[in-house]
Image 1: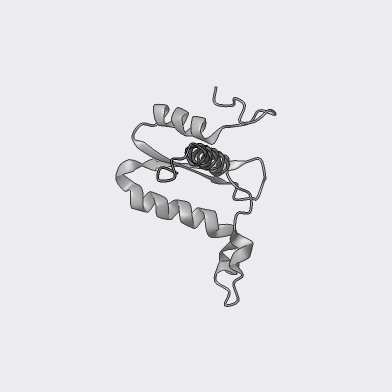
Image 2: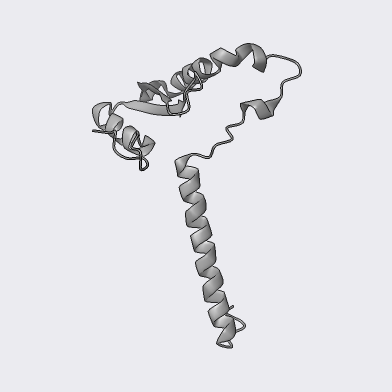
Length: 121
């Protein structure tokens, strides 16, 4: 039921997955992460009781870094290797909304300027 088009090719929409899990696990907090194994089209899902939030988040963190723990503890750690280069769908959507809002504000200011309302522009 959750596997509805996150894109033209289908896939799982993280927001819809969170919503579906919240319905069946109302007393749990759900965390979605990129796949720990590095699989591009996969994600890991963690659910833990809300009343154990700190412990749950620590467990998620420990599990997520387990495959690269040795690298993280190295003295010459290159943080760039741990940066997620691909924007999430949420980030991309937010950037588009921001760009659209900025373009709309610019159009309004230009309209006011051209109409002679320099103060409003």
